[in-house]
Length: 404
Image 1 (cartoon, rainbow, N blue to C red):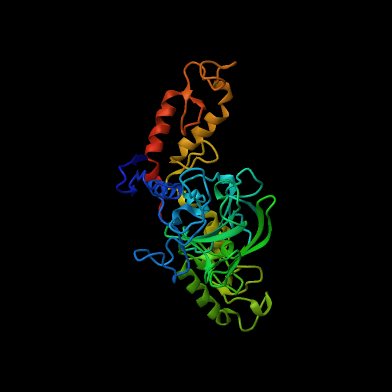
Image 2 (cartoon, rainbow, N blue to C red):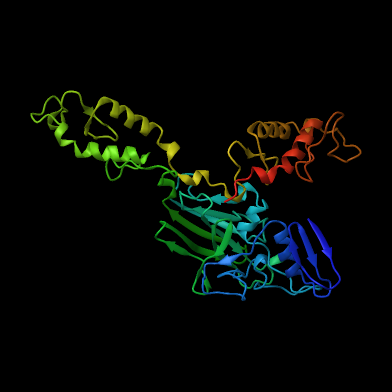
């Protein structure tokens, strides 16, 4: 990113360049335009009646706790170049890879339909708890979800007023602050998508909040599959054509039972048919091949269920790539073999440093090794070819990300 200060004529952002006007510069503007240079768009709200100005879209610039809404953001007084903006909202910090993986909670990824978690304020990253919660609900679009975050008047957020919980809807890579009328909600009940978010308590002293999330995403099928419904509670995921076939089998059930009963009582099947056994007590009579199909569906059920386990946020890798994970905030996408090598390099790090330190202090590498430099402070010692590979992976990073 390049920053240029011009001669009191114009200001803005074009690509990775930020143009600042020294005659009217203030940090809210500079931060906002820097966000654009980093690839961020404006933030919005769900209030479609709000128009910030004549050229703005509905809801645009309507997230007052986000620097990317800074034509309409809460600021703080600074010694120079006031006002100072609030920080970035969670969805945009997430997109930039500035929240470490262990500090992001993805609801339903563990198969739960209800979770109670503690969130700490984004401006208090040393606090206990998660920094961001993702709440997926749309099997057809894994980039469509809610997020939950806590904002407190600490540090860069000193000017926001009382601590609050913010809920955003993320769709199409854009963040929308969830409002009810003009009020930003701290809890919601989305009956259409069978998900609710409830702020249970807030603790201003610790800048934390306890939030309960409930939803059915863990029981939903992956896109392209539907519940089999051999009975109303049968939620094994199958193809739509297979569900149609199961419904036909149920409709034919009575005609395939031996009218005189038999060894298995009134559920005895006619010759050439067997019980389907899609679930315990399933005595619908089907050809033997169909029972085999049902058993196979049951065995593979987990692989077709719970879209939440595939929700990785805005830095999701394209097929064939995985996160490198040189550290907890490394979201660069690489081939799986590179991640394996990176984990091995991390485990060997201590053995490749010069005992007692050296020219570069305690991180000085032994002869034959160099810093990997997957990121500026990455001082894991590796062979030269690994550093070259890390640089190439960094250069190719954006092309390997699956964008909505």
